[in-house]
Image (tube, rainbow, N blue to C red):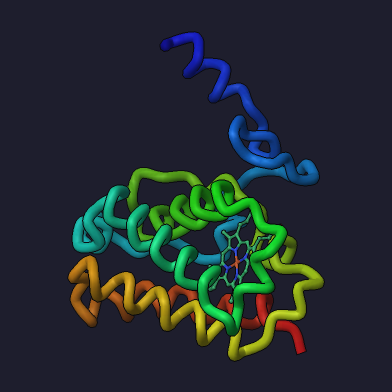
Length: 156
Ligand code: HEM
């Protein structure tokens, strides 16, 4: 058990067991693209890491199933996407998480994402937060952190 943990911790962020390897990059919380909120309260309001995991999984699953965006996720490693997105949200909500994924520009490069793709994903995120009974004001605090990322994620 302990040895398995050591092996896992020794894995570089681009080659995690159970996930497809991606091109090497330097992991940093700066890659999350937003600074954390202050205080632990918002993280608790989201149901902690377990609540965030459920919200992220539901958002990704709904985006993959949505005919508006399903093609975009055809070649995506959904295990990695859910893990890194969950780390990112946990980090931004000031939970006890580090973000180990790529920066937002690199992660979405050459995908040709448009505003309507972002709108669809945010709709699914809002539904997922509603299901977890995250109050509207708390939802908006996360959305306010994600909103400026549009500049680097959406291409025109
Ligand atoms: C604020 C909005 C968004 C955030 C915070 C976000 C976050 C992320 C994160 C954390 C990753 C994984 C990075 C990594 O693998 O190292 C990622 C990858 C990805 N995102 Fe987003 N994303 C956003 C918007 C979108 C939208 C609107 C779409 C399409 C509808 C999208 C599609 C994808 C896809 C397909 C990947 C996988 C890329 C690959 O397989 O290499 N993302 N995103």
